Image (cartoon, rainbow, N blue to C red):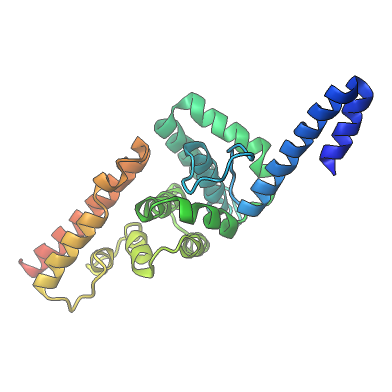
Length: 250
């Protein structure tokens, strides 16, 4: 409908050439709206092109910011420390100019419509590697923990996002345990995705598997911020293994 309205307007102003230009502009705007609504995630690609099965860096940043906004608002209050963490993360990851552009686009486009976690994850899931999606969950926990306390509501929100991203339950619990320290070694075993009855050989095997899963090399294709996040997870795996090893005298 919009394309015909603009075509008619163009015809009255500039006759046939104006009608053609108006039609093309209307077609473009209609398709942009369809792309955004159907994908649920922000897509900055040209709607005349076929959609790629890989998410562009700009789209990933905007959708990551959208998911972070859901976590920040999960407990019914907006923490300034959490907001500051997100801004600092984007500035460190992408530079001040690019980060500011991302925030401006978020405020102008995404913030004006409801942010739906499931739709965003449906858009991201087939376009990102599993290692990248693990890092997204780690980032969201960092956002929740920025004020020094991860609330149950924030955990539930991140868990639902993890489910939408098809993150294995054991992997979610492993990352979650990195943000909840216990007086005993319970969290260490959870990080390695084993129970306390595991043998020493099983502990060693679990450590090797988790170190391989969270190795920073897995995210060499991503920006430096993601690689730093992988390094943080890798260190937590090492710390968990060392704690268990000391307790057992291995």
